[in-house]
Length: 223
Image (tube, rainbow, N blue to C red; front, top):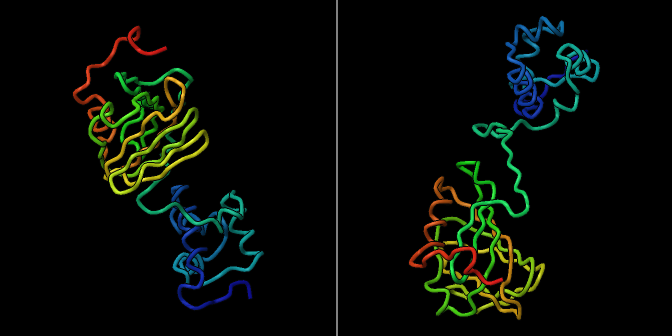
């Protein structure tokens, strides 16, 4: 007996993987049957999770489709989220800068629009909330990793925390927050990853960063 009938739904992963592999190749079930020499009814039952296949039949199937057998046991990508294959490289010293008296934000990978996260290299100079101004609030969540110096993190509902090099914090961005320089150096540095469902998060953060503070020329920034 080359096929094994199993309870409905028991082989749903195999069926989903077979369907995904077939669709990725632009094939109908009939074409798969023709290429593999397997019965159309068998393939239909497999895709619907009603039948499993013995090892020799799996080899027959994958050989006919010229695919690796492992592809039949890896879950298909979530429906509605196809692989986009997007990528963007940020080189040292590159990015879109927003310079103010108390901080510098360098936005990375700005050539990609509609990102699910916004990577920012931050340089923090303000040492007090009076210098920094009102706490920041924006959509989404964020992670801040200190790469040099010491950073004091002020939030709306928690006592301030001091982060050293290598320390990080993950927080709800809708909660008021501010990053201040708490070290001896002229500035502290870190990497901030902001995430939001809002497609215009980059513009939101750029407006927040530029609020009521005139940008400085390069020769006015601290060394």
